[in-house]
View 1 (tube, rainbow, N blue to C red):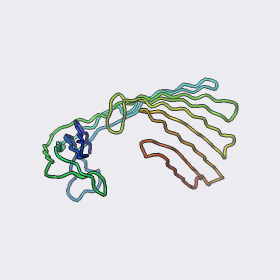
View 2: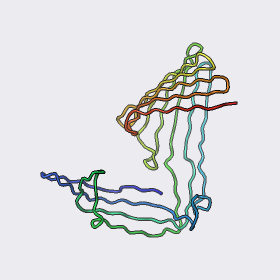
View 3: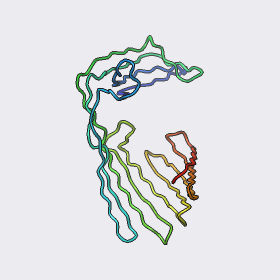
View 4: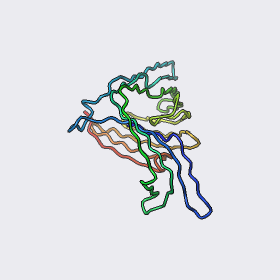
Length: 216
């Protein structure tokens, strides 16, 4: 499924009452009756990534172009949702009246979907025997499907004093926001432990994850 708000205006008067006028469109496909997976989906296609890398002495560099290809769909449902009315605040957030909403749907016999192309460039420099410095950039050629045309820049350090330990930290900048992350990995024979800490603006701030696995 894909959805996009194509236009919208929110007005708030002096008394605090809010009025919304918005229009959105969406696409989706119906699965066969009784089907809970996409094994018999009406869409088919391919996507691939192409890249090149270069290494000399302590320098490493790479360039990649992602999301090359397309997916073709049959009998795709296309809908338009419009809302023109008041917006009230309830215990669970904004509430919209269905009386002010209008939905129309049509069937598209053939539809070709292409994801926005993404260009990624990165490089690294090996300091001393165990310290690495990384620098990279990623940008989409258009907005959509979680891809942004606003460039994302990042840099970080990685320290691997021994084969059993790996520590890394990085900082990135995207769409006027800074994100931070830290990583600790331990490899003890067949036991692998991974701890990650970060601050990601799009995820609401601080986040953490841990993983423990056996590796033979």
